Each structure stands twice: as C-alpha cells, then as structure tokens.
Image (cartoon, rainbow, N blue to C red):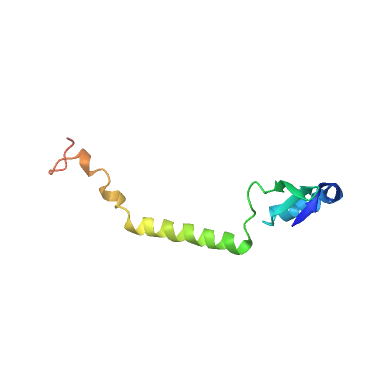
Length: 85
C-alpha cells in the first residue's frame, strides 16, 4: 500500500495496524517513496503459533526418548566393582 505522507497523518493508527499484520506500507512525498512502515516483529497467527508449539513438543518428546538413562548418568564416578574412583 502506498500513501502520501499528508494523507497518512490522519490514518497513522490504521497504518501501524496494517504494518503489524504484515502488510507493506509505503509513505510517499511528491509521488516518490520515502518511508516504509515495518513491524518490529510480525504477530504470528493462531495457526502458526499452534504449529510452532506442536513442533517444540515433538522435539522434546524425541529428546526424552533418545536421551541417556538417568540411572546410568554417573557411572564415570565408579569403577567396575561399584567403588568410587
């Protein structure tokens, strides 16, 4: 969306919301683009947020299954007879 700076003054709140939603907002002066409004971080949609949460849960489950057993995690401290090294 391109808009003259003079017209943007009255619509700033709306333009910021559009930029936050991911729309490109370009302000012009005398027909030449001079400013682009860009959101600092685009708000993820509910669908994208759900996908991200599912991916994190799947990675955590895979790590829990593949990880070493906690019962054997300190074996390096003991010799073959079970005595401290």
